[in-house]
Image 1 (cartoon, rainbow, N blue to C red):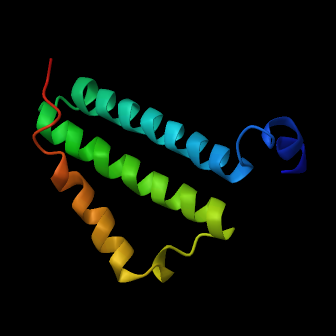
Image 2 (cartoon, rainbow, N blue to C red):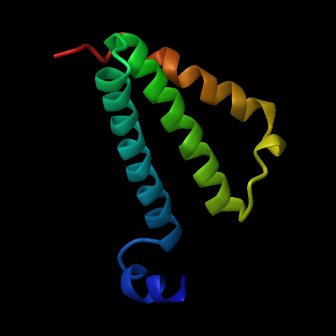
Length: 99
């Protein structure tokens, strides 16, 4: 962490860079899961996108919890956080359409 602070700490906070890298990892997880769902399992686009979104959101939640709190206390988060996370996929139902 100290080395990262010396390298990029003067440009952006190291914790922000860590959360940004976890977000990029979430995008990679989402796209990989979407591809596997479409090509290997033959799911429809809407179902595959829902599966990919759920997998990416879950992995991001666990990785961000690990980065912020230093452990895997997924059962300790407040219920308001679970409620907020569960509403995110509903807000983007009509956004993604197959090309």
